[in-house]
Amino acid sequence: MQSKFDENFYWITVIVSFWLTRLFNPLGITPGDASRYQLAPESNILEAHVIVQNIYWYGGILFGREIIFSFILFIIIYYNIIKFYRESEGPKSIIKFIIIFNPMYILFIAFPSKETILLLAMIYFYKFAIRETTLFNTIMSLIFLYFIFRIRLFYTIPFIYIIFLKLGFGKFQIAVGSALLFFFFLNFTSENLILILQGISDDFVGYEIARAASTNRLWIDLVSFNSYLDLFFYYLLGIYTVFLSALPSEIIIRPSLMPLFLIGIFKLYIIYYLLFKQKIDSLILSRYYIFLALILFVLVPLSIYNIGSSIRYQIPFFIIITLLSGRKFFLKFKYF
Image (cartoon, rainbow, N blue to C red; front, side):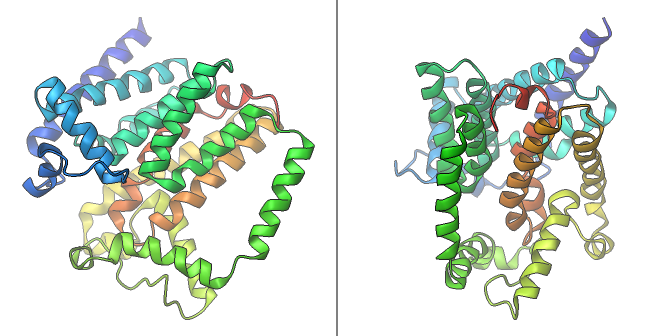
């Protein structure tokens, strides 16, 4: 009875939060933003924003209005979240409730966004990947992985590890893969690194509008750094902002950032629980270490420049790692 009450409470919270978010628009979505999804797409090229625009445009036509389609996607996401939460072997606590349903997540997935589509793709990739290996399940897994690849290229890295576990590569395949990685890094130059960092930098500070944004850290320059020690410091900053989002100095200047910091403390607790409080086999724990390390590898560079990005870009990943709780997920796979 208590579980049913909790589930009803979650649904009431989720539905009310969606409509309040759309009514009051706390993120300040402008008509210019909305027009990207309310005007017919002018292109069908496979770029991230075009894919998302097409999904919302045709979804809006199918369901009459974009807001109805967004609500349908929102309900599908939280149907799966609540189902995972019900089946989870992790802590049934208010802290987990806050992480999964915290308002910062709902703010970003109540409106048309890449995060909504990414989260859906991640959920369904997981659901098909853990099932019995059949041609249908394999094809569906690859379809959702392809969506992740097209919308956020680097987000596929942790999920490739899932495929690695699923396929159960033996020692020979591991040796070949290790040799290829060694060859790659042997030929990887500082120019290659700067080219990658330039691409990350351009996503945030490549436009005049972005340069004027008050949440950008304009004192960071990943491309023209003075030394690799500076680059190391920036990445340490990224590890901090992945969880806590805002620096103490930024919170002092803008006290409204304090909720992001408090949510970050809850996120750190969840990571602490997943890594140190679960009674799981050492092999499974080592797999979880690898999975989290790959996620951090992806998210850290994206959280350095901008306060908002340190929340927005990690939403799909953090919901996934919170729900899976490291146990049922990694027990499914038999091989290292």
